Length: 159
Length: 440
Image 1 (cartoon, each protein chain N blue to C red):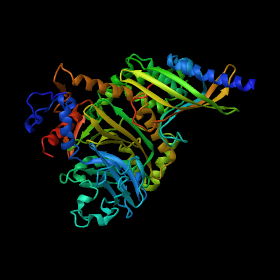
Image 2 (cartoon, chains in turn blue, green):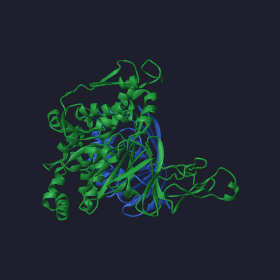
Image 3 (tube, rainbow over the protein chains, first blue to last red):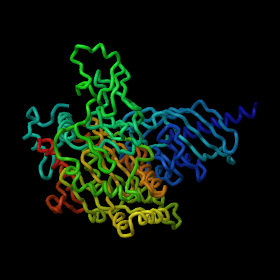
Image 4 (tube, each protein chain N blue to C red):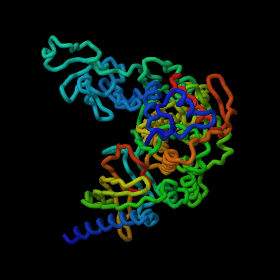
Protein backbone atom coordinates (compact mmCIF):
# COMPACT_ATOMS: atom_id res chain seq x y z
CA UNK A 1 0.00 0.00 0.00
CA UNK A 2 2.78 2.37 0.86
CA UNK A 3 4.29 1.84 -2.57
CA UNK A 4 0.99 2.54 -4.33
CA UNK A 5 0.40 5.69 -2.33
CA UNK A 6 3.93 6.77 -2.94
CA UNK A 7 3.62 6.21 -6.67
CA UNK A 8 0.31 8.09 -6.83
CA UNK A 9 1.96 10.91 -4.93
CA UNK A 10 4.98 10.97 -7.24
CA UNK A 11 2.81 11.08 -10.34
CA UNK A 12 0.59 13.82 -8.96
CA UNK A 13 3.60 15.87 -7.96
CA UNK A 14 4.98 15.47 -11.48
CA UNK A 15 1.72 16.69 -13.07
CA UNK A 16 1.47 19.61 -10.63
CA UNK A 17 5.07 20.52 -11.36
CA UNK A 18 4.41 20.43 -15.09
CA UNK A 19 1.36 22.67 -14.64
CA UNK A 20 3.42 25.10 -12.59
CA UNK A 21 6.15 25.31 -15.24
CA UNK A 22 3.50 26.26 -17.82
CA UNK A 23 1.86 28.84 -15.55
CA UNK A 24 5.25 30.41 -14.78
CA UNK A 25 6.25 30.35 -18.47
CA UNK A 26 9.33 28.30 -17.67
CA UNK A 27 9.19 26.91 -21.21
CA UNK A 28 12.69 25.45 -21.39
CA UNK A 29 12.17 23.43 -18.23
CA UNK A 30 8.85 22.23 -19.61
CA UNK A 31 10.49 21.16 -22.89
CA UNK A 32 12.99 19.15 -20.85
CA UNK A 33 10.18 17.06 -19.35
CA UNK A 34 9.77 15.29 -22.69
CA UNK A 35 11.66 12.37 -24.12
CA UNK A 36 13.47 13.51 -27.30
CA UNK A 37 10.92 11.64 -29.44
CA UNK A 38 7.99 12.59 -27.15
CA UNK A 39 4.86 14.07 -28.68
CA UNK A 40 2.43 16.76 -27.57
CA UNK A 41 -1.04 16.25 -28.99
CA UNK A 42 -4.39 18.02 -28.85
CA UNK A 43 -6.82 16.05 -31.04
CA UNK A 44 -9.44 17.83 -33.12
CA UNK A 45 -12.26 15.36 -32.46
CA UNK A 46 -13.35 13.21 -29.56
CA UNK A 47 -11.76 9.78 -29.51
CA UNK A 48 -9.36 10.61 -32.34
CA UNK A 49 -6.85 7.78 -32.78
CA UNK A 50 -4.88 9.02 -35.78
CA UNK A 51 -2.74 12.15 -35.91
CA UNK A 52 -1.26 11.53 -39.35
CA UNK A 53 -4.33 11.16 -41.56
CA UNK A 54 -6.59 13.46 -39.55
CA UNK A 55 -6.04 17.09 -38.62
CA UNK A 56 -5.41 17.98 -34.97
CA UNK A 57 -5.43 21.19 -33.02
CA UNK A 58 -1.82 20.48 -32.10
CA UNK A 59 0.50 17.63 -33.06
CA UNK A 60 3.97 18.67 -32.08
CA UNK A 61 7.28 16.91 -31.92
CA UNK A 62 10.33 18.40 -30.18
CA UNK A 63 11.08 20.65 -33.17
CA UNK A 64 7.63 22.20 -33.32
CA UNK A 65 7.42 22.58 -29.54
CA UNK A 66 10.73 24.41 -29.56
CA UNK A 67 9.60 26.64 -32.44
CA UNK A 68 6.50 27.55 -30.43
CA UNK A 69 8.69 28.46 -27.47
CA UNK A 70 11.09 30.45 -29.64
CA UNK A 71 8.17 32.36 -31.14
CA UNK A 72 6.82 33.27 -27.70
CA UNK A 73 10.20 34.78 -27.00
CA UNK A 74 10.18 37.08 -30.05
CA UNK A 75 9.62 40.79 -29.65
CA UNK A 76 7.34 40.66 -32.72
CA UNK A 77 4.90 38.01 -31.47
CA UNK A 78 2.15 40.56 -32.10
CA UNK A 79 -0.67 38.43 -30.74
CA UNK A 80 1.16 38.04 -27.41
CA UNK A 81 1.26 41.70 -26.41
CA UNK A 82 0.56 41.30 -23.54
CA UNK A 83 1.46 37.64 -23.25
CA UNK A 84 -1.08 34.99 -22.24
CA UNK A 85 -1.21 34.16 -18.55
CA UNK A 86 -2.61 30.85 -17.44
CA UNK A 87 -3.67 28.97 -14.32
CA UNK A 88 -3.64 25.20 -14.72
CA UNK A 89 -5.66 23.12 -12.31
CA UNK A 90 -5.08 19.35 -12.50
CA UNK A 91 -7.13 16.78 -10.62
CA UNK A 92 -8.82 13.36 -10.73
CA UNK A 93 -5.42 11.79 -11.30
CA UNK A 94 -5.73 8.08 -12.04
CA UNK A 95 -2.96 5.66 -12.88
CA UNK A 96 -4.56 3.77 -15.74
CA UNK A 97 -1.73 1.46 -16.59
CA UNK A 98 1.09 0.62 -14.22
CA UNK A 99 3.85 -0.43 -16.57
CA UNK A 100 6.40 1.03 -18.92
CA UNK A 101 5.19 3.43 -19.98
CA UNK A 102 2.86 4.47 -17.20
CA UNK A 103 -0.45 5.77 -18.47
CA UNK A 104 -1.97 8.50 -16.34
CA UNK A 105 -5.33 10.15 -16.86
CA UNK A 106 -6.29 13.42 -15.24
CA UNK A 107 -8.79 16.22 -15.62
CA UNK A 108 -7.78 19.84 -16.13
CA UNK A 109 -9.11 23.36 -16.11
CA UNK A 110 -6.89 25.95 -17.76
CA UNK A 111 -7.91 29.57 -17.42
CA UNK A 112 -6.16 31.81 -19.90
CA UNK A 113 -6.11 35.58 -19.98
CA UNK A 114 -4.70 37.81 -22.69
CA UNK A 115 -5.61 40.94 -24.65
CA UNK A 116 -8.62 39.16 -26.11
CA UNK A 117 -10.06 38.42 -22.69
CA UNK A 118 -10.29 35.45 -20.33
CA UNK A 119 -11.41 31.97 -21.30
CA UNK A 120 -11.70 28.59 -19.67
CA UNK A 121 -10.35 25.50 -21.37
CA UNK A 122 -11.23 22.14 -19.86
CA UNK A 123 -10.78 18.50 -20.60
CA UNK A 124 -8.69 15.45 -19.91
CA UNK A 125 -4.96 14.82 -20.05
CA UNK A 126 -3.46 11.47 -20.85
CA UNK A 127 0.23 11.24 -20.04
CA UNK A 128 2.39 8.35 -21.14
CA UNK A 129 5.35 8.52 -18.80
CA UNK A 130 8.63 6.71 -18.60
CA UNK A 131 10.63 6.53 -15.39
CA UNK A 132 13.77 8.63 -15.55
CA UNK A 133 16.82 9.00 -13.32
CA UNK A 134 14.86 11.73 -11.56
CA UNK A 135 11.08 11.56 -11.85
CA UNK A 136 9.52 10.88 -15.24
CA UNK A 137 9.88 11.76 -18.91
CA UNK A 138 6.86 12.37 -21.14
CA UNK A 139 6.47 10.12 -24.17
CA UNK A 140 3.06 11.53 -25.00
CA UNK A 141 0.97 14.30 -23.54
CA UNK A 142 -2.51 14.09 -24.98
CA UNK A 143 -4.90 17.00 -24.36
CA UNK A 144 -8.55 16.17 -25.02
CA UNK A 145 -10.46 19.44 -24.84
CA UNK A 146 -14.17 18.95 -24.20
CA UNK A 147 -14.81 21.49 -26.97
CA UNK A 148 -12.06 20.29 -29.33
CA UNK A 149 -14.38 20.46 -32.35
CA UNK A 150 -15.58 24.00 -31.56
CA UNK A 151 -14.75 27.29 -33.23
CA UNK A 152 -11.61 28.43 -31.44
CA UNK A 153 -9.86 31.65 -30.72
CA UNK A 154 -6.11 31.20 -31.23
CA UNK A 155 -4.47 28.57 -29.05
CA UNK A 156 -0.98 29.95 -28.61
CA UNK A 157 0.45 28.62 -25.38
CA UNK A 158 0.71 25.01 -24.26
CA UNK A 159 -2.47 23.73 -22.65
CA UNK B 1 -22.19 52.07 -33.21
CA UNK B 2 -24.08 54.53 -35.37
CA UNK B 3 -23.55 54.83 -39.07
CA UNK B 4 -20.16 56.35 -39.52
CA UNK B 5 -20.54 58.52 -42.58
CA UNK B 6 -23.02 61.35 -42.12
CA UNK B 7 -26.18 61.54 -44.19
CA UNK B 8 -28.67 58.94 -42.95
CA UNK B 9 -29.59 55.95 -45.09
CA UNK B 10 -27.09 54.34 -47.40
CA UNK B 11 -28.43 55.09 -50.87
CA UNK B 12 -26.77 53.74 -53.98
CA UNK B 13 -24.81 56.93 -54.56
CA UNK B 14 -23.50 57.05 -51.04
CA UNK B 15 -22.53 53.37 -51.11
CA UNK B 16 -20.72 53.86 -54.40
CA UNK B 17 -18.75 56.75 -52.95
CA UNK B 18 -17.24 54.52 -50.26
CA UNK B 19 -15.01 52.86 -52.85
CA UNK B 20 -12.61 54.94 -54.91
CA UNK B 21 -10.12 53.55 -57.43
CA UNK B 22 -7.25 53.71 -54.93
CA UNK B 23 -8.84 53.84 -51.46
CA UNK B 24 -11.89 52.75 -49.47
CA UNK B 25 -13.79 54.41 -46.66
CA UNK B 26 -13.29 52.79 -43.24
CA UNK B 27 -17.04 52.31 -42.79
CA UNK B 28 -16.95 49.38 -45.24
CA UNK B 29 -15.21 47.40 -42.48
CA UNK B 30 -16.62 48.95 -39.34
CA UNK B 31 -20.22 50.02 -39.83
CA UNK B 32 -22.82 47.41 -38.77
CA UNK B 33 -25.31 49.01 -41.18
CA UNK B 34 -22.96 48.21 -44.08
CA UNK B 35 -22.67 44.63 -42.82
CA UNK B 36 -26.46 44.30 -42.83
CA UNK B 37 -26.54 45.52 -46.42
CA UNK B 38 -23.76 43.09 -47.38
CA UNK B 39 -25.82 40.18 -46.10
CA UNK B 40 -28.56 41.17 -48.51
CA UNK B 41 -26.61 42.46 -51.49
CA UNK B 42 -23.38 40.43 -51.51
CA UNK B 43 -24.19 37.21 -49.65
CA UNK B 44 -27.80 37.37 -50.84
CA UNK B 45 -26.69 37.59 -54.48
CA UNK B 46 -23.40 35.75 -55.00
CA UNK B 47 -22.86 32.01 -55.39
CA UNK B 48 -21.73 30.82 -51.96
CA UNK B 49 -19.77 27.62 -51.32
CA UNK B 50 -21.91 25.28 -49.23
CA UNK B 51 -19.86 22.12 -48.97
CA UNK B 52 -18.26 19.30 -50.90
CA UNK B 53 -20.38 16.45 -52.19
CA UNK B 54 -17.93 13.95 -50.70
CA UNK B 55 -19.13 15.08 -47.26
CA UNK B 56 -22.52 13.47 -47.94
CA UNK B 57 -21.62 10.28 -49.85
CA UNK B 58 -24.63 8.12 -48.86
CA UNK B 59 -28.40 8.43 -49.12
CA UNK B 60 -29.73 10.53 -46.26
CA UNK B 61 -26.34 12.04 -45.39
CA UNK B 62 -26.49 15.70 -44.49
CA UNK B 63 -24.15 18.54 -43.66
CA UNK B 64 -25.07 21.87 -42.09
CA UNK B 65 -23.67 25.00 -43.63
CA UNK B 66 -24.19 28.75 -43.95
CA UNK B 67 -25.14 31.03 -46.80
CA UNK B 68 -24.66 34.50 -45.41
CA UNK B 69 -26.37 34.19 -42.04
CA UNK B 70 -28.87 31.60 -43.23
CA UNK B 71 -28.25 28.13 -41.86
CA UNK B 72 -28.73 25.59 -44.60
CA UNK B 73 -28.66 21.81 -44.80
CA UNK B 74 -27.12 19.98 -47.74
CA UNK B 75 -28.75 16.57 -47.92
CA UNK B 76 -28.40 13.52 -50.18
CA UNK B 77 -31.79 12.25 -51.42
CA UNK B 78 -32.60 8.58 -52.10
CA UNK B 79 -32.07 9.26 -55.84
CA UNK B 80 -28.53 10.46 -54.87
CA UNK B 81 -29.23 14.08 -55.79
CA UNK B 82 -27.89 16.67 -53.33
CA UNK B 83 -30.28 19.39 -52.19
CA UNK B 84 -29.58 22.63 -50.33
CA UNK B 85 -32.48 23.63 -48.05
CA UNK B 86 -33.07 26.11 -45.26
CA UNK B 87 -32.52 24.19 -42.03
CA UNK B 88 -35.91 24.89 -40.50
CA UNK B 89 -39.28 23.28 -40.37
CA UNK B 90 -41.95 24.73 -42.65
CA UNK B 91 -44.42 24.66 -39.75
CA UNK B 92 -42.99 26.52 -36.76
CA UNK B 93 -39.41 27.10 -37.86
CA UNK B 94 -37.60 24.60 -35.62
CA UNK B 95 -34.13 23.58 -36.75
CA UNK B 96 -34.41 20.12 -38.27
CA UNK B 97 -30.87 19.05 -37.48
CA UNK B 98 -28.22 20.42 -35.14
CA UNK B 99 -25.30 18.00 -35.60
CA UNK B 100 -22.86 19.44 -38.17
CA UNK B 101 -22.86 16.13 -40.10
CA UNK B 102 -25.18 13.14 -39.95
CA UNK B 103 -27.71 10.92 -41.67
CA UNK B 104 -31.41 11.71 -41.75
CA UNK B 105 -32.66 8.47 -43.33
CA UNK B 106 -35.30 8.82 -46.02
CA UNK B 107 -36.83 11.99 -44.65
CA UNK B 108 -36.30 15.06 -42.53
CA UNK B 109 -38.55 14.86 -39.47
CA UNK B 110 -39.15 17.85 -37.24
CA UNK B 111 -38.49 17.14 -33.54
CA UNK B 112 -41.42 19.34 -32.44
CA UNK B 113 -44.73 18.31 -34.11
CA UNK B 114 -43.45 15.51 -36.28
CA UNK B 115 -43.93 17.01 -39.72
CA UNK B 116 -41.77 15.06 -42.12
CA UNK B 117 -40.28 16.13 -45.40
CA UNK B 118 -38.59 14.46 -48.36
CA UNK B 119 -34.92 15.21 -48.92
CA UNK B 120 -35.85 17.72 -51.63
CA UNK B 121 -37.79 19.66 -48.99
CA UNK B 122 -41.32 18.72 -50.09
CA UNK B 123 -43.81 17.88 -47.35
CA UNK B 124 -44.27 14.14 -46.94
CA UNK B 125 -46.69 13.83 -44.07
CA UNK B 126 -48.14 15.51 -40.99
CA UNK B 127 -49.65 13.69 -37.99
CA UNK B 128 -53.47 13.62 -37.81
CA UNK B 129 -53.95 15.10 -41.31
CA UNK B 130 -57.78 15.02 -41.00
CA UNK B 131 -57.45 18.01 -38.66
CA UNK B 132 -56.66 20.16 -41.68
CA UNK B 133 -59.79 19.20 -43.61
CA UNK B 134 -61.57 22.30 -44.89
CA UNK B 135 -58.68 24.63 -43.99
CA UNK B 136 -56.25 26.53 -46.21
CA UNK B 137 -53.57 23.96 -45.43
CA UNK B 138 -52.46 22.23 -48.63
CA UNK B 139 -49.83 19.52 -48.50
CA UNK B 140 -48.80 20.30 -52.08
CA UNK B 141 -48.54 24.05 -51.59
CA UNK B 142 -44.80 24.92 -51.44
CA UNK B 143 -45.56 27.19 -48.48
CA UNK B 144 -45.90 24.02 -46.42
CA UNK B 145 -42.59 22.58 -47.61
CA UNK B 146 -39.03 23.31 -46.51
CA UNK B 147 -37.77 26.14 -48.70
CA UNK B 148 -35.00 25.31 -51.09
CA UNK B 149 -32.30 27.80 -51.90
CA UNK B 150 -33.35 29.32 -55.21
CA UNK B 151 -30.24 28.14 -57.05
CA UNK B 152 -27.79 25.34 -56.32
CA UNK B 153 -25.16 23.75 -58.48
CA UNK B 154 -22.06 21.66 -58.07
CA UNK B 155 -18.79 22.25 -59.89
CA UNK B 156 -16.78 19.01 -59.88
CA UNK B 157 -18.08 18.19 -56.40
CA UNK B 158 -17.86 21.72 -54.94
CA UNK B 159 -21.47 22.64 -54.15
CA UNK B 160 -22.48 26.28 -54.43
CA UNK B 161 -25.85 27.88 -53.74
CA UNK B 162 -27.36 31.30 -54.20
CA UNK B 163 -30.14 33.05 -52.34
CA UNK B 164 -30.96 34.97 -55.52
CA UNK B 165 -33.36 33.72 -58.18
CA UNK B 166 -31.43 35.46 -60.93
CA UNK B 167 -27.90 36.61 -61.67
CA UNK B 168 -24.95 35.04 -63.48
CA UNK B 169 -24.93 31.25 -63.68
CA UNK B 170 -22.25 29.41 -61.71
CA UNK B 171 -20.05 28.90 -64.76
CA UNK B 172 -20.07 32.61 -65.60
CA UNK B 173 -19.65 33.53 -61.94
CA UNK B 174 -16.55 31.38 -61.48
CA UNK B 175 -15.03 32.42 -64.81
CA UNK B 176 -11.25 32.12 -64.92
CA UNK B 177 -10.98 30.82 -61.37
CA UNK B 178 -12.31 27.47 -62.57
CA UNK B 179 -8.66 26.84 -63.42
CA UNK B 180 -7.97 26.45 -59.69
CA UNK B 181 -10.89 24.11 -59.00
CA UNK B 182 -10.00 22.07 -62.11
CA UNK B 183 -6.37 21.88 -61.10
CA UNK B 184 -7.41 20.84 -57.59
CA UNK B 185 -9.36 17.86 -59.01
CA UNK B 186 -6.88 17.08 -61.79
CA UNK B 187 -4.14 16.63 -59.20
CA UNK B 188 -5.91 13.41 -58.31
CA UNK B 189 -5.00 10.46 -60.53
CA UNK B 190 -8.76 9.77 -60.63
CA UNK B 191 -9.67 13.41 -61.29
CA UNK B 192 -11.59 13.69 -58.02
CA UNK B 193 -10.97 15.01 -54.53
CA UNK B 194 -12.76 14.29 -51.27
CA UNK B 195 -12.88 15.94 -47.86
CA UNK B 196 -10.72 13.98 -45.42
CA UNK B 197 -9.13 14.59 -42.06
CA UNK B 198 -11.66 16.75 -40.24
CA UNK B 199 -12.30 20.46 -40.07
CA UNK B 200 -10.56 23.08 -37.96
CA UNK B 201 -12.46 26.26 -37.09
CA UNK B 202 -11.11 29.66 -36.10
CA UNK B 203 -12.97 32.78 -34.97
CA UNK B 204 -11.41 36.03 -36.13
CA UNK B 205 -12.22 39.33 -34.46
CA UNK B 206 -12.43 41.21 -37.69
CA UNK B 207 -14.53 41.87 -40.74
CA UNK B 208 -14.70 39.11 -43.37
CA UNK B 209 -13.11 41.33 -46.05
CA UNK B 210 -9.90 41.61 -44.00
CA UNK B 211 -9.32 37.90 -44.49
CA UNK B 212 -10.00 37.96 -48.22
CA UNK B 213 -7.67 40.90 -48.78
CA UNK B 214 -4.92 39.29 -46.75
CA UNK B 215 -4.97 36.16 -48.93
CA UNK B 216 -3.19 38.15 -51.63
CA UNK B 217 -1.47 40.71 -49.44
CA UNK B 218 2.19 40.14 -50.30
CA UNK B 219 3.30 43.15 -48.31
CA UNK B 220 2.54 41.58 -44.94
CA UNK B 221 4.39 38.25 -44.48
CA UNK B 222 7.84 39.63 -43.77
CA UNK B 223 6.41 41.98 -41.13
CA UNK B 224 3.42 40.20 -39.63
CA UNK B 225 5.05 36.77 -39.48
CA UNK B 226 8.46 37.81 -38.23
CA UNK B 227 8.01 36.05 -34.90
CA UNK B 228 7.33 32.66 -36.48
CA UNK B 229 9.81 32.72 -39.36
CA UNK B 230 12.60 33.91 -37.07
CA UNK B 231 11.68 31.15 -34.62
CA UNK B 232 11.85 28.55 -37.41
CA UNK B 233 15.20 29.90 -38.62
CA UNK B 234 16.68 29.97 -35.13
CA UNK B 235 15.47 26.45 -34.54
CA UNK B 236 17.00 25.21 -37.76
CA UNK B 237 20.29 26.98 -37.14
CA UNK B 238 20.51 25.54 -33.63
CA UNK B 239 19.55 21.96 -34.44
CA UNK B 240 20.08 21.18 -38.10
CA UNK B 241 23.67 19.84 -38.19
CA UNK B 242 23.79 20.53 -41.92
CA UNK B 243 20.51 18.76 -42.67
CA UNK B 244 18.13 20.48 -45.12
CA UNK B 245 15.25 22.33 -43.52
CA UNK B 246 12.34 19.95 -42.85
CA UNK B 247 9.00 20.54 -44.59
CA UNK B 248 7.22 21.67 -41.41
CA UNK B 249 9.82 24.42 -40.80
CA UNK B 250 10.00 25.36 -44.47
CA UNK B 251 6.28 26.20 -44.32
CA UNK B 252 6.92 28.67 -41.50
CA UNK B 253 10.20 30.00 -42.87
CA UNK B 254 8.75 30.93 -46.30
CA UNK B 255 7.06 34.05 -44.95
CA UNK B 256 10.47 35.55 -44.37
CA UNK B 257 11.27 35.88 -48.07
CA UNK B 258 12.30 39.42 -49.06
CA UNK B 259 10.13 41.90 -50.97
CA UNK B 260 11.86 41.06 -54.30
CA UNK B 261 10.68 37.46 -53.98
CA UNK B 262 7.05 38.45 -53.53
CA UNK B 263 7.19 41.04 -56.29
CA UNK B 264 8.09 38.36 -58.83
CA UNK B 265 4.80 36.51 -58.22
CA UNK B 266 1.83 37.12 -60.46
CA UNK B 267 -1.45 38.29 -58.98
CA UNK B 268 -4.38 37.31 -61.17
CA UNK B 269 -7.87 38.73 -60.66
CA UNK B 270 -11.23 38.06 -62.31
CA UNK B 271 -14.51 39.77 -62.91
CA UNK B 272 -16.41 38.63 -59.81
CA UNK B 273 -13.56 39.37 -57.39
CA UNK B 274 -11.91 35.96 -57.64
CA UNK B 275 -8.22 35.40 -58.26
CA UNK B 276 -5.11 33.51 -57.39
CA UNK B 277 -1.45 34.03 -56.77
CA UNK B 278 1.00 32.15 -58.93
CA UNK B 279 3.13 29.62 -57.09
CA UNK B 280 5.13 30.41 -54.00
CA UNK B 281 6.11 27.22 -52.26
CA UNK B 282 6.77 24.01 -54.11
CA UNK B 283 6.27 20.71 -52.38
CA UNK B 284 9.59 19.02 -51.63
CA UNK B 285 10.50 16.53 -54.36
CA UNK B 286 10.98 13.66 -51.91
CA UNK B 287 10.27 9.94 -52.20
CA UNK B 288 6.57 10.37 -51.47
CA UNK B 289 6.30 13.10 -54.07
CA UNK B 290 7.97 10.97 -56.73
CA UNK B 291 5.58 8.12 -55.96
CA UNK B 292 2.69 10.55 -56.32
CA UNK B 293 4.00 12.06 -59.57
CA UNK B 294 4.37 8.54 -60.96
CA UNK B 295 0.74 7.73 -60.08
CA UNK B 296 -0.37 10.90 -61.84
CA UNK B 297 1.69 10.07 -64.92
CA UNK B 298 0.25 6.57 -65.02
CA UNK B 299 -3.25 8.06 -65.00
CA UNK B 300 -2.84 11.04 -67.32
CA UNK B 301 0.37 10.49 -69.32
CA UNK B 302 3.65 12.32 -68.73
CA UNK B 303 2.80 15.48 -70.67
CA UNK B 304 -0.56 16.13 -68.99
CA UNK B 305 0.79 15.19 -65.56
CA UNK B 306 3.64 17.68 -65.93
CA UNK B 307 1.20 20.41 -66.95
CA UNK B 308 -1.06 19.68 -63.98
CA UNK B 309 1.80 19.87 -61.49
CA UNK B 310 3.22 23.01 -63.05
CA UNK B 311 -0.08 24.79 -62.45
CA UNK B 312 0.84 25.78 -58.93
CA UNK B 313 -1.60 28.34 -57.54
CA UNK B 314 -1.27 29.72 -54.05
CA UNK B 315 -4.34 30.88 -52.11
CA UNK B 316 -7.09 31.04 -54.68
CA UNK B 317 -9.96 33.40 -53.92
CA UNK B 318 -13.54 32.47 -54.73
CA UNK B 319 -15.16 35.68 -53.58
CA UNK B 320 -16.87 35.95 -51.09
CA UNK B 321 -16.98 32.45 -49.60
CA UNK B 322 -13.89 30.30 -49.93
CA UNK B 323 -10.21 29.94 -50.67
CA UNK B 324 -8.79 26.72 -52.13
CA UNK B 325 -5.09 25.97 -51.97
CA UNK B 326 -4.59 23.28 -54.59
CA UNK B 327 -0.92 22.40 -53.96
CA UNK B 328 -1.48 21.58 -50.30
CA UNK B 329 -5.08 20.32 -50.72
CA UNK B 330 -6.71 22.88 -48.43
CA UNK B 331 -9.98 24.72 -48.64
CA UNK B 332 -10.70 27.55 -46.28
CA UNK B 333 -14.33 28.60 -45.98
CA UNK B 334 -15.07 32.13 -44.82
CA UNK B 335 -18.30 32.89 -42.95
CA UNK B 336 -19.20 36.43 -41.91
CA UNK B 337 -20.70 36.37 -38.41
CA UNK B 338 -21.02 40.08 -37.65
CA UNK B 339 -19.32 43.29 -38.70
CA UNK B 340 -16.30 42.37 -36.56
CA UNK B 341 -16.46 38.57 -36.35
CA UNK B 342 -15.57 36.07 -39.06
CA UNK B 343 -15.43 32.30 -38.81
CA UNK B 344 -12.94 30.45 -40.96
CA UNK B 345 -13.22 26.70 -41.50
CA UNK B 346 -10.20 24.75 -42.69
CA UNK B 347 -10.81 21.59 -44.70
CA UNK B 348 -8.19 19.20 -46.03
CA UNK B 349 -8.80 17.05 -49.09
CA UNK B 350 -7.59 13.66 -50.27
CA UNK B 351 -6.54 13.37 -53.90
CA UNK B 352 -8.38 10.16 -54.78
CA UNK B 353 -5.97 7.52 -56.02
CA UNK B 354 -2.86 9.34 -54.73
CA UNK B 355 -0.54 7.83 -52.09
CA UNK B 356 -1.53 8.38 -48.42
CA UNK B 357 1.51 10.60 -47.93
CA UNK B 358 -0.19 13.33 -49.97
CA UNK B 359 -3.04 13.59 -47.45
CA UNK B 360 -0.54 13.43 -44.60
CA UNK B 361 1.36 16.35 -46.10
CA UNK B 362 -1.90 18.31 -46.37
CA UNK B 363 -2.63 17.52 -42.71
CA UNK B 364 0.81 18.82 -41.71
CA UNK B 365 0.18 22.01 -43.68
CA UNK B 366 -3.21 22.48 -41.97
CA UNK B 367 -1.78 21.84 -38.48
CA UNK B 368 1.26 24.08 -38.93
CA UNK B 369 -0.18 26.93 -41.00
CA UNK B 370 -3.98 27.06 -40.77
CA UNK B 371 -4.99 25.52 -37.42
CA UNK B 372 -6.24 27.74 -34.56
CA UNK B 373 -3.10 26.50 -32.77
CA UNK B 374 -0.75 27.36 -35.66
CA UNK B 375 2.30 29.46 -34.77
CA UNK B 376 1.81 31.40 -38.03
CA UNK B 377 -1.89 32.30 -38.02
CA UNK B 378 -2.22 34.10 -34.64
CA UNK B 379 -0.25 37.06 -35.90
CA UNK B 380 -2.53 37.32 -38.95
CA UNK B 381 -5.61 37.15 -36.78
CA UNK B 382 -4.06 39.74 -34.46
CA UNK B 383 -3.30 42.29 -37.16
CA UNK B 384 -6.78 41.93 -38.67
CA UNK B 385 -8.23 42.60 -35.19
CA UNK B 386 -5.97 45.62 -34.74
CA UNK B 387 -7.19 47.03 -38.07
CA UNK B 388 -10.78 46.35 -37.06
CA UNK B 389 -10.32 48.14 -33.74
CA UNK B 390 -8.52 51.07 -35.30
CA UNK B 391 -10.93 51.55 -38.18
CA UNK B 392 -13.88 51.71 -35.79
CA UNK B 393 -12.32 54.79 -34.20
CA UNK B 394 -11.48 58.29 -35.37
CA UNK B 395 -8.12 59.24 -36.78
CA UNK B 396 -8.62 59.11 -40.53
CA UNK B 397 -11.42 57.90 -42.77
CA UNK B 398 -9.69 56.31 -45.77
CA UNK B 399 -7.71 53.12 -46.26
CA UNK B 400 -4.96 53.40 -48.86
CA UNK B 401 -4.72 50.89 -51.70
CA UNK B 402 -2.34 52.90 -53.84
CA UNK B 403 0.45 50.35 -54.44
CA UNK B 404 1.09 50.09 -58.18
CA UNK B 405 -2.39 51.40 -58.90
CA UNK B 406 -3.34 51.20 -62.57
CA UNK B 407 -0.35 49.07 -63.57
CA UNK B 408 -2.30 45.81 -63.82
CA UNK B 409 -2.70 44.42 -67.36
CA UNK B 410 -5.86 43.04 -68.92
CA UNK B 411 -5.35 39.42 -69.91
CA UNK B 412 -8.26 37.67 -71.62
CA UNK B 413 -10.81 37.00 -68.90
CA UNK B 414 -9.03 38.89 -66.12
CA UNK B 415 -6.11 41.02 -65.04
CA UNK B 416 -2.51 40.33 -64.08
CA UNK B 417 -0.59 42.46 -61.59
CA UNK B 418 2.92 42.33 -60.19
CA UNK B 419 3.45 40.67 -56.82
CA UNK B 420 3.58 43.73 -54.58
CA UNK B 421 0.57 45.42 -56.15
CA UNK B 422 -2.57 46.06 -54.12
CA UNK B 423 -4.58 45.15 -57.20
CA UNK B 424 -6.31 42.19 -55.47
CA UNK B 425 -7.83 44.51 -52.84
CA UNK B 426 -8.87 47.00 -55.49
CA UNK B 427 -10.40 44.23 -57.58
CA UNK B 428 -12.33 42.85 -54.61
CA UNK B 429 -13.72 46.30 -53.81
CA UNK B 430 -14.53 46.97 -57.46
CA UNK B 431 -16.86 43.98 -57.43
CA UNK B 432 -18.03 44.70 -53.86
CA UNK B 433 -19.14 48.13 -55.07
CA UNK B 434 -21.01 46.52 -57.96
CA UNK B 435 -22.85 44.17 -55.60
CA UNK B 436 -23.66 46.92 -53.13
CA UNK B 437 -24.98 49.33 -55.73
CA UNK B 438 -27.15 46.69 -57.36
CA UNK B 439 -25.15 46.21 -60.55
CA UNK B 440 -24.89 42.45 -59.92
